Image (cartoon, rainbow, N blue to C red; front, side, top):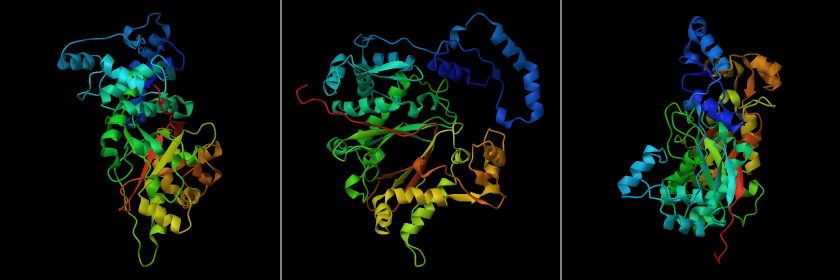
Length: 437
């Protein structure tokens, strides 16, 4: 059973898991805003009949077919003027609605030449469409997005990261509006001028690689806005960050993930928010470092997915919290004796709120229809969530769900705390193209 508009996404997700022609029945309207009497009426007036029909029908409506055939990559699909090509691509849902660079064979071959793989190489299967991402079709999307050929190794590694089961690509179509992003680390970020400083996401390389990521998600992973990509208010374009490693007092993000400092790597992550970036200040009664730590803790407790943050065990939904921190903030914390693990441990221990306030969030903004005590007794929340209303509970399950990236204007004291659901950050090393290719 689904709510209105989500049947296609249900079938799409089921197909990714190997279930063809999933039978669905829609509950009419926004379930979360209906009282018990309205729910009863909706069930009796139509839902039961739709369930019976779905379970007993031997035929499958053609509209339920959400899979797409994988094309032979070298085949030309159309020819004509730029306007003809744009119209052809738009009517088939292959674009993001903006003007694009026509992916001619000559352009695609230049991009393939700069990859570390042959044109026909199969890189990974991307759910939920379960189509192969190949060097060729990755190049097609990169051309359309306005990338440079030299960006291909980053996109190939990004596809490998997206295919990791921890990325949970099948689940990013949530109505909460999950926005994918990439983080690039290592020497290659400098060589390819991927910005990590002031206004980083607004620069050309960052924008074009982010746009290519979005087109890959659409054209290979198979997400379609309003059909399987269900963000209630839509989506901004995916974006790209680079860590400002030469301004950071700590080891780079990819090093914390097990890669060498000399290597280059890309991390796939997601967020439900972008923009708000409060500033910690030094005052007579408190250091700027202490204010920065407390500010991160306060920001964590304001997030939409707060009710998922403390969850533990096999029933826990994956969450990731990414803290973007400008270099002056990172340097002040380092000068105060904090390494990255110290910061994440502090946030874990001190991001707290009254249990009564947390219960309000769980009761009125989550669909689970349960209490903190019930979830604690079921082992989904830690035992402290079965405490008294005034108990100050830790809202994070572990320091490990907090990830720190040093980037942004090196002359500003700003922090941005991003939350993401269903996904863990996944990192892959970027393979350079052989020099003789």
